[in-house]
Length: 454
Ligand code: UD1
Ligand code: CA
Image 1 (spheres, rainbow, N blue to C red):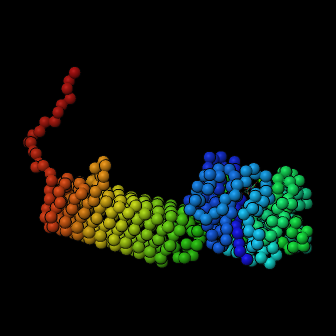
Image 2 (cartoon, helix red, strand yellow):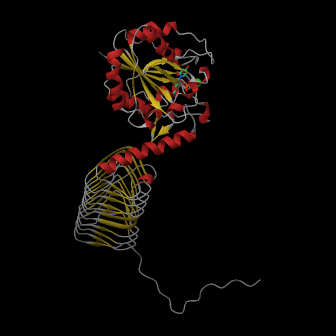
Image 3 (tube, rainbow, N blue to C red):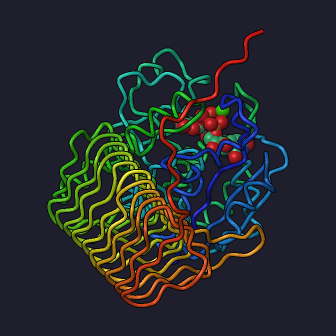
């Protein structure tokens, strides 16, 4: 039986007080709706149908790379109406999971459980028992069997005592959706077409309504305002931190760790506080990340130690390297094993060979550095003439004296030495010394200028 996924995302999200549609607000660096689409993809769904309304263009633009079918709900007449607008594109057979674009943390596991029980009955719900169920639709049971969902505003005082709530996540046979949705009415306290009314229709048809509970309660938490968004972010991060620790990562403080993407780890990785990891990253065995580092789309090989406050963006770092503190590796930085990059060193689109060092205040842009070279403090590769960029090539075992400017294109050959303070504009031959610096001027008993008396 083929599975479709229907995602409700037409709501305005007024309480976010944002110009960005609610489902585009980020959780762990990814739009709320993006999380739901990712989970839907894991379920091998035949089609993913998203119902949009407010900010529809922006929402669609954010997911042009995804294979999603978009259906517009021009007026928000209720959750039942929202699903009804998908009927023209919804297959007649198979089964549909109905999810919410603002409930981002629902897991594949819970949805698979729901699918399994619902395939038997034709309809199933994710429900949750809460200490305070105020505001939610209540699950009405008789002899343990679900009879109906009653919205808070329509519930009797007796029903208000029910603690089991409707999470808004359903699984329903498509044939039944085609049959039931056109029959919904808006004769209720909110004057809306309630999707929840299909439960009573199922009972009337003699069906049993299945239910499952989520593994973790935060899976079904919705986001309506910034407070809920921030709270959910922490729950999501706590869960990711837990999974990493279970894989053997030593997080010094899991409450001060943020992963906005995916992280592959080796053994005995240690991560100090306030580290942010974004995109797809990989840390090898025994890698240590100091406090306050930001690491994006970067691979760091085994044994490398990163000191605090270093920033990585699309970089690759070899084994047993030493980076930071305060290092900045920009896109295209490729460091071989045992490289040292020290404080206030910026590396962009450059490769640095085995064991080479740039320990202090340096810019290496569009450079190729061989193995065993030493780049002195304050060295700058002048790679840009204001219009074009050029390469600097430094061979093996070169020594660049402090405060040198290497004006590209330029080639410093193997074993060459550049004297401190030089502005190098011509190639330097193998094993030679180049110094570009005026002779030191000296004057004895020098009188400094005096202030002019007025
Ligand atoms: C709904 C359920 C309630 C459940 C609660 C869980 C109904 C009638 N009630 O209530 O039983 O406990 O969710 O959070 O379904 N949406 C549209 N178009 C619409 C209306 C809503 O796309 O016309 C979308 C919203 O953007 C949101 C979702 O549907 O993503 C839920 O809508 P919302 O108004 O928040 O439902 P509740 O009243 O909270
Ligand atoms: Ca509502």
